[in-house]
Length: 170
Ligand code: NI
Image (cartoon, rainbow, N blue to C red; front, top):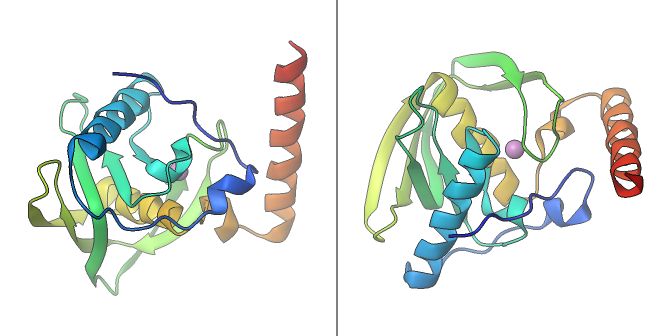
């Protein structure tokens, strides 16, 4: 097991489009396990491979209070989206300490491969639905701040760059 460093916005690598996983083999299972360890260590509810600079379609999520219900999505596709929308605060491990409102489908049905390479479908609502949509955006190179106004996004970008400079100096 190993912890990955998490890319921080506005790192251009966060805008890479991930390719599908061809075979769910030991390499992918190791990636999944390391991503889960990284997500739990960072106290996040979701992590996409893009955020750890691996550009393959792999997501891990755990929205349980007990932090012991990992959801692994390999090559996820949304096969249904509710017309009903939900607006809620989102954050991201790649944009620490920034939270803002994003509009998402209230419910989705996702089809994906699990850690054993078996196809499954999952209907999700609430936080899990939001999280699936947020993480799937990462796989196409999209960070949630891109839903915000250009003004807000520029302010976040400056704040993140300033913080990175301060951390580099410390
Ligand atoms: Ni994120």
